[in-house]
Image (cartoon, rainbow, N blue to C red; front, side):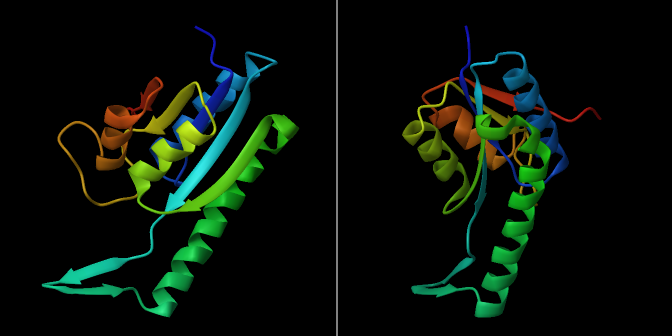
Length: 147
């Protein structure tokens, strides 16, 4: 099976860095392959009973600035691929945004780290990677850190 359009979900964490390296290797192995690197961030939302609140402007701005740094770091990693690599940042719910991006860009493979920067953990996979594995319509390669 040849993967021509590869998506790497990237948040700057060690597992996502490993996923990016794997995505780069796959693209380098096939001159016709392209790499999409997507960083997804979500602005904080809080529910207190029936009330809904968002993060303060300062917190939101810090998150946007952090996301810009993560995107720039990813760009530096793939610049040598030239037009065969696209790096984008998307704002929205993490797992669903990755799946939506994969569908809209008709990717053949999603490469994702087993855990990201979130402090929340599931038994086997992180909640984002779990969602992507369960929801994506294409193959998903989950990269796990060696312990």
